[in-house]
Image (cartoon, rainbow, N blue to C red; front, side):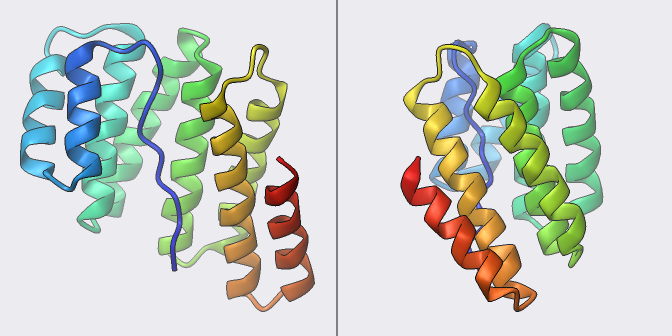
Length: 162
């Protein structure tokens, strides 16, 4: 099962972007080192991005409770600084976390929450469209997993429309 876990937020500290890239190539130890280092002095969206990155690392190691804690802390900051993209990406990651925990209904709720946010963004970027596609694909996978094939097909078709 492929469920997207999103990790990039635009206009971040370059060190956070480097850590995100290291995470992407599965160099988790180096990514964690950078996230932790930046976290010591980061504020606002950079701090939230570090927490999200640490959550992604925990997620990738199957430490779901720790990942959830990091995501929750990041979500509060993204909300406080009004970073809607960050909020959406946390909701996507929480949906993916719910999938891996075997809670498909909760996953769909998180994906729906993320979809509403992404669709309401002003000045949508290519990354926003990719997020929307990922949400539809993730929802399709969840519906497929619970044998709701017609709903899965609808989600996959929506992904092609974006």
